[in-house]
Image 1 (tube, rainbow, N blue to C red):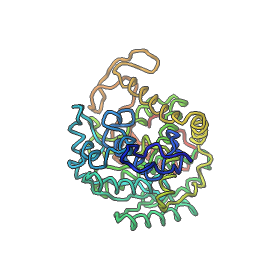
Image 2: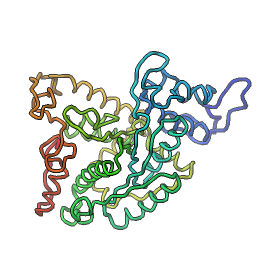
Image 3: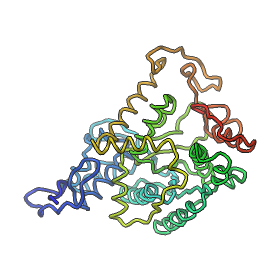
Image 4: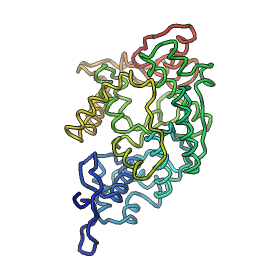
Length: 399
């Protein structure tokens, strides 16, 4: 293969190393060492609040590989001051908000799969390298899927030992009155079962985080996942979720809602293929078997479309995310609807302030106290249907 395009090329530098792979995001031939560096640094920029498009303003990860030097790059990223350094501004005077605050307790959602395993490894690595000052934990959810989750939990326990991180495991069975995903599928069938699992898992993460008294939960959702979710919400015409799915952090600073735990996606701009390559070259231990119930999920159609688009143009994944961000931004304009009509503003009955008429407002569930946009959260609605023996219940959009 050709020489690595990211190796230093100055006269005093040694010859570029031989490229070992072609980077999925850019198709650049790169060596293993430069791939590690650019992969880790791009995630650091995301955590620091630069995102993808703005990374060049502070110095790109590729420039760092080409000889800028780790010490200078760390200094420009606010290294000595940890997260606080970038929150207060960079050399251009532009204030940016990083994902974390020094001293935060952060729970890493751990499933044992490639995404969460690499996330745990990267969070520990960057926390030490850039002095974020975070207290890290692993939080895992046992959905009760025989022959699948047992093996993946063994991997999570192994990761906890390898990375020296405390681990908390919660199960659907203890949280939802004895219900496991195997029992749910027995009642509702395999069509739509992923809806139950996704809703229950999100709430389980929140409950686990509350039990650990953490300030922040991070999950391994990658760029492919976000692009798929954008397409799904566009295809379903789900405006409220389109607004939320592109946000890198949710659950924070909600008006009228106290005690919500922030949830972030440090891998929002990180390609799934690059996560797999990083785990492979770093020889990380992860569980690679697909969930036995996932092949019937609606998401599979969006995933197939994203993969087809990526094969034609690798930037399609990031382009979809940027398009979703632009649509979400335009939808947040007061009085504006997706069809261009103007709605009146009305005061929310919960006292949360002004909201667009007819649009759901984030609040807490009256039954369990978890975050919701309806009087009852989705988890309570689904659980009530299961307990009554009502299979295949139809969900309200934005519940």
